[in-house]
Image (cartoon, rainbow, N blue to C red; front, top):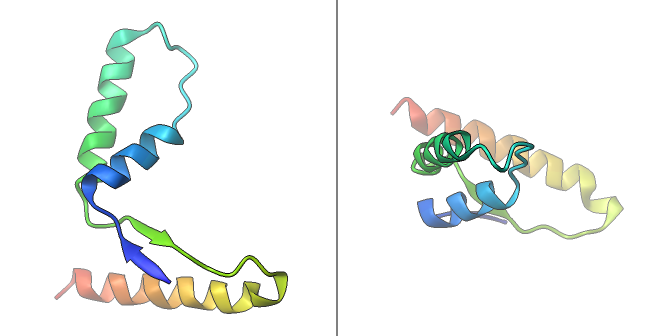
Length: 77
């Protein structure tokens, strides 16, 4: 259900889902890209594959909560 993403994959997804109003502000765009690059290097990005059925929504939610808790526990090891 959860698959870790590489930094490159994470960066591509972050850029794809970014919205910047001032596309002519080159310094702002460069700074934003630098911030996303730093963020994408963190091991916090996962791809989630789940059934797209309403009746499974509760199970998917529980899996997300369980995964997040497990990931947070490993941060302090």
